[in-house]
Length: 269
DNA sequence: ACATTGACCTGAGAGC
DNA sequence: TGCTCTCAGGTCAATG
Image 1 (cartoon, rainbow, N blue to C red):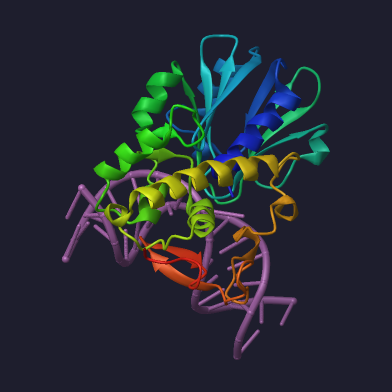
Image 2: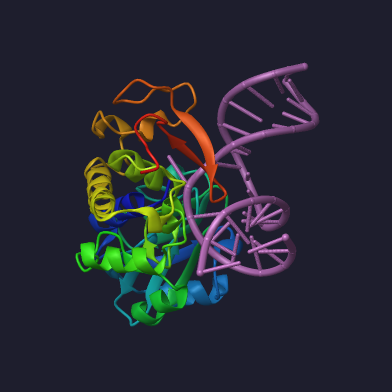
């Protein structure tokens, strides 16, 4: 679930429900999710602080506290964020719970525990240490920047480049498939084999697909029913057919991950 | 410099 | 009902 669009939606959910709220207490329900800090210190540092701002970079969410620290959140494959009113409503697999002095609780939920929650002094230094490339939706990431990346990563497969967080931050398995489907490129292609027009189409698909997915997530999560009809995303199965040409969708393995493609629409040229 | 594999975790769903 | 197997939207380390 949590690729850039999902994390952006979590960010907005936090802004809508929890910004300006003061933390009365913090409950760490599973300490394995914490990175670089003990539950005791984590709770001590947060108690009495308020959430005053948010920042997303790729799949990472950072939350500013009115002290100088930042809360850092990464969601792995199954993480999410949910505000709830009463303790009775605490979602399953809630690993960290922020209890506000008023207006309920914010839960960091994560089934598979692949993800981390921590504290950072300085967001820039934190992102640098994580080794992340530019955020895929950052306006500074433009066609020229993408072409420069493509030159540097000419020997990678296109799907691997899209998912490489040190190159472009925010795209994972699902959205890399969607982007490649939308611009008609085969995931197995070498980046170096893309001509100028293919690079431009790929770059435009990155922006378009991610923006469209964020728009489809006005609620707390992406509603696949609100995605355009031409999206592959709701059709990730081998029983599905291409929304464009009706050819059977197939599953192949690329760079160690399963990719769903339309063998008719996605060419190697 | 790249791809591949397995490990980290838990739960859902399929098949028996 | 319950067992076993496979799979999953992320990342990291080890290996080829």
